[in-house]
Each structure stands twice: as structure tokens, then as C-alpha cells.
Image (cartoon, rainbow, N blue to C red; front, top):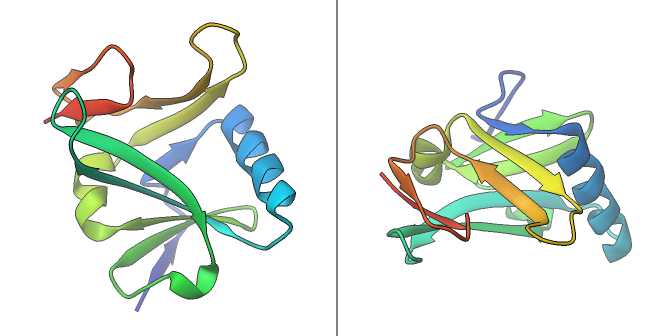
Amino acid sequence: MTQTTEQKGILLSETALNHVRMLRDQQGKDLCLRVGVRQGGCSGMSYMMDFEDPSQIGEQDQVFDYDGFKIVCDKKSLLYLYGLMLDYSNAMIGGGFQFTNPNASQTCGCGKSFGV
């Protein structure tokens, strides 16, 4: 069974939350945000993030609720992401989503991949 928790294993800044809500609203559907990792990238593992229908939330998923907006992460990815801070910047250079991962022993210059 999926677990929704008040304690946040994946943290969102207010700026990031507002931006993902805006992006979700542009989709015109009630979607959740899936965050995870996959093999690859400059440092060995890369972050992945995409919207998905809440009906796709499975038993192996952890759900974090932000005032009705759900962030979903599978338990295997959460081992690498627990404590991750997701932020967003609209700066012209270096803007976009930014990942601050306390579990990463190295990160690449682009900020989209990491090693443990």
C-alpha cells in the first residue's frame, strides 16, 4: 500500500512548488509529480522528474503531500533522494530546477546528475 506522510523525504521550496503547480495547471489535469533516479549522467546517476496520473501510484511508492499537490517517489529511488531539496530559479543563466541532495558524494557541473 502506498504511504502518504507528513514528514517530507523530498523537500520543495515555495518557488518550486508554485512552478510545478503552474506547469501542472497547463496540462489541464490533476497530475502528481514523480521524482526518481536512473543510471546514467555525468556522475553515474541522474535525476528524473515528470508528471503522471495519480492512478499510476503503486505499492512501492512513497507519497508526499504539499497542500494537495502530491510528489511521488519509488522506495528504491528514495534511498538516494531522501532529504533532497528541490528548488526553482528563473534566472536567465543557470535557471530551472535545482537539486540539492545530501546523499550525493559528487555532483556534475550541470547539477542534473550525481554520484553516491
